[in-house]
Length: 100
Image 1: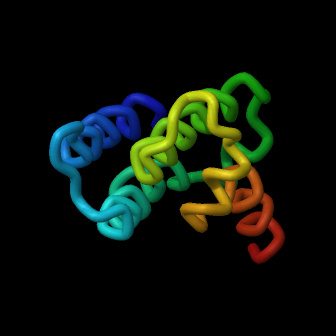
Image 2: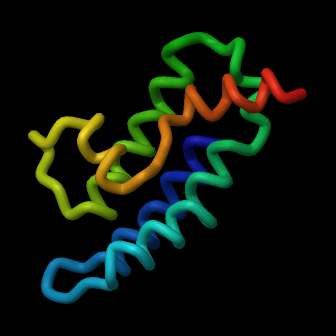
């Protein structure tokens, strides 16, 4: 899942551009539809996975948040999640497990 999400994130990076960029709300929609949906596929199965595996997916999400917000690497991740209104993957996975 990490590989597929990273490939889709590379496409998002091309849309974000450095000299021109698409609006952040459009980048957020593309991220949610293409990248995040790929990472959430089967999240009930990886809820019991090792922490190192889930950390790899969180790194992909953090890269996506930086693209959406246009933030620098020193920007706190929690602030980017709040600004972009995207919940962490682990919280979403716990929510899915509780509802099933």
